Length: 121
Ligand SMILES: [Zn+2]
Image (cartoon, rainbow, N blue to C red; front, side, top):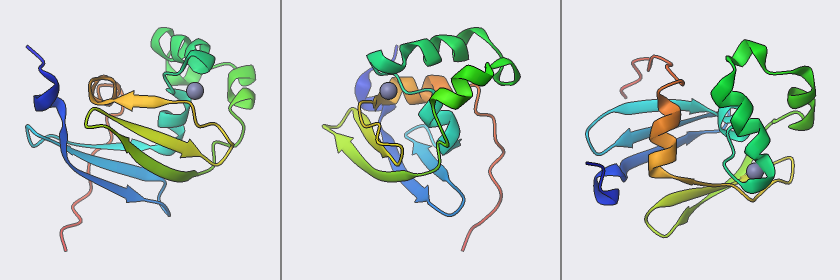
């Protein structure tokens, strides 16, 4: 019921000052992801433990050790498309292993329930 093509976003906006990424999905759903959430949710093998923490704990219960391990999260240096199925983030902390496919990003949006402020220009 989820073919890859229908998962592909129709628009991606990166707001560096606000440290947010706004993705418009093909079904017109618009979701906003903050950098910290994305960095902590990095799906690469190295970060799987953090991912596991995220899936099994509420954000408030993420251990201090986990927070420290991902450092200052700070900022994003670059985003690159991976084929037509994913995004690759280069984080300022030097971590570049994560490939976030569309399905995974949509999974994340269930917990990233930030209301989109009305910013039509
Ligand atoms: Zn990672």
